Each structure stands twice: as C-alpha cells, then as structure tokens.
Image (cartoon, rainbow, N blue to C red; front, side, top):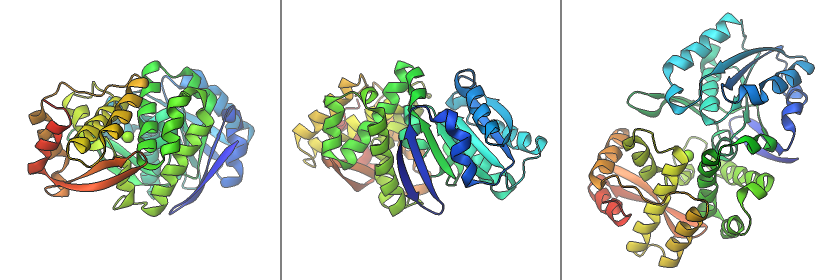
Length: 352
Ligand code: MG
C-alpha cells in the first residue's frame, strides 16, 4: 500500500492500493469515534461497490445509512445538496458521526460540501472510484456545488479525515472516464516533472495506476501545502483550466471536464509557443502525449464565444486572467493577461 501524508488545516493520509474497499472500516476506525456513517454513493457506483463498502464499515462497528445520488455534473446542484442535508437530519447524524463519499468527483464534491456545512462540519472521508477523483478532486479539500450561473460557485475548503483509493475500482471505468482522468495526470507532468511526463509515454496510465496516482497525489499535496486556500502557488493546478472551463461551459457541458482540460492545455501550449514562451518542441510533445491518450486538442467553438465565457468566469477576479503557461516540460508559470489581450491568446491557441 502506498500512503501519502497531507499537512493542511487538518492532517490526513491518502492510502492507495488494490482491494482497499474491503478494508475501509478497519482503516477509518482509528481516526474517529463515530458510531454512525452516512455512506453517500453515486447511482452507478452503488451496484458495483456499495454493499462491500457498507459491509466493511459495519464490520468495524459503524452503523451505516446509505444515500444513493444520481450521477452526472447536472446533479451537482443545491437541490441534491439540500436532499443530502435533509437525509442527515432524518438519520439523526450528529457532529461526531461520519460522512463517507464513495464515487467520482461529483459525489465527493457534493458530499464534502454537505459534510462541511451540516451542523457546521462533520467528519468526512473520500473513497474515490474514478481516476479523476483519485488524482485530483478527492485530495486538497475543495468541495462545492454548481449554481445556474456557474460551476463550483458555492463551496468550502474542507479537508477530509482520510482518502482511501482502491485501485481495483478503476477497472470498471468507461473508456471516456479513463481518458478524462488521464488529462489531469498529463497536466501534473507538464507542470512539475519531466521524468513523470516521459513515463506516461513509455507505459500507459492503466498499466501503472498505483505509481501514477501516488505521484499525482504527491504533486497535489505539495501545491496544497504551499497554498491551501488557492491564492498563490496552488493556482498552477489550473493549467488548461481557464480555456478548458470556457470550452466546457460554451459546449453546454457536452464536452467533459477532462476533455476540456486537454483542449485547454493544447491551446495554451500553442499560444505559449507562438509567443516564444516555450519551444515548439515543448508544444509538440504536449500535443502528442494528449493525442496518444486519444484526448482532443482542438475546439471548433469560435474565439468570440470562448472570450465571452472567460469574461463571465472572471467577473469576480477583476479584468485580469491568471493563465498558467508552460515554459518547458516540468515548469510552468502564472502569467497575468488582461481580458483585452485574451482574445489574441485564444486565437494563438488555435480558436477560430
Ligand atoms: Mg480539473
């Protein structure tokens, strides 16, 4: 088993290994005196892994109640969040009890925000079952729901008591979910580590899940420890996300998050090369690794629409975007760009 310790406003351990779901109860028992555990689970994950997880929690002495929620970003809403809170009330969950999120990013974000706010905060654990949740959303304490006006517009920084990642659950990922997770994995290589980037070309992510997830969690841990509340260095993790969010929202969320991040990374790599901020070889290596994982590198959405989306996104940040720009593989920089200049960056990135 690989374990990574995170030191933030709460310290916790991320455990990564095959077969961990059956050990969930045993791993959590020393961390909490909770008598009850509310298991929150996506509706596609429940039939695959729900009973086993509940049984493991029960064997460790937790009395378990289960809330199955519908899958998909369109359900990451105030309505589902309200349902969760009401469920906790109905089951008489107390502040000393535990909320356990079993599933992907949507489940973790929703259950985490509900745990952060129910009775001003109840213990919370993440059991990620997608690659994207394992390498990104389950670690670092960002929890949120979407509002009609935008993604993740209501949320809290709320660190879990533990993250337990059973790599066996990744065997049931759809091809699309796998690819989306790989986009975030490639992001870490471009941001932080040439050697890691190269290893993704030599061996597919699916052939080295434990090593890849442990490496990504360690990269994310370092960013979170340096800047838990996302005002400085943690913003590097937004590589590919400024343009990516614009693509995601202009597509009406038909382009999935990971695919949008891939397109966003490709665009910023093109723009960086066009402006002499990185070598053309660096741009080509990024594009070619994304393509090797069958990820998209272009959008047919017009630059004007993407710019309007960037403007909406930036309402609260004033008129300056913080673009994350690759300088070489393993080293990126935060570059402030005015909204007036952003259209040029989008066109240099290949938008029409
Ligand atoms: Mg992301």
